[in-house]
Image (cartoon, rainbow, N blue to C red):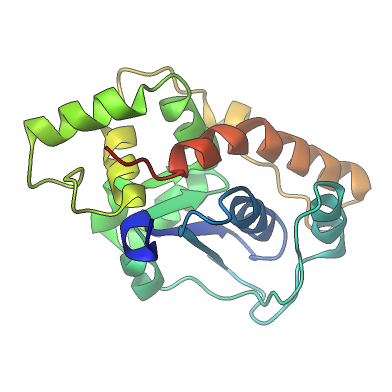
Length: 203
């Protein structure tokens, strides 16, 4: 699967030093060899800063690489280039869409995306979506990440989505090790579903 067909994922939180780097590096780890590109940014980024030590430690617990990272500020161009935007919270989702309104249908919080995809029959539902609109965002010549975003959007109203207070990833910045442990626990409870769905399928 080539990168062009696999697609690009952008992960967003506030400072781009705790939650989004953790999600980014875990997706990179879980999607190794698939061609899916994963990057991250912050709505109020600590530009140039490395991953916070608490998140570095949490990534170490799951044997994910935290090296070579520098926080960056989100821009409309970064959103435009992404096939799927995954945010730490619903508030971040709203901030992304405010920057680029046309990204609405491909931007989801991590918890929301996991809820939408948890019981999806990807092959069957993707084929049905493409048959309904052969030239739409789920068309076979689109990237897998873009097709998955279209499928997730189509499942809104048909899937049970938790309230933000139940699925948003808590911010551990400036807090102790227990806060980072809670962050990683909440991410790990949801990221497996999303990573598995992001693994490109071929007909």
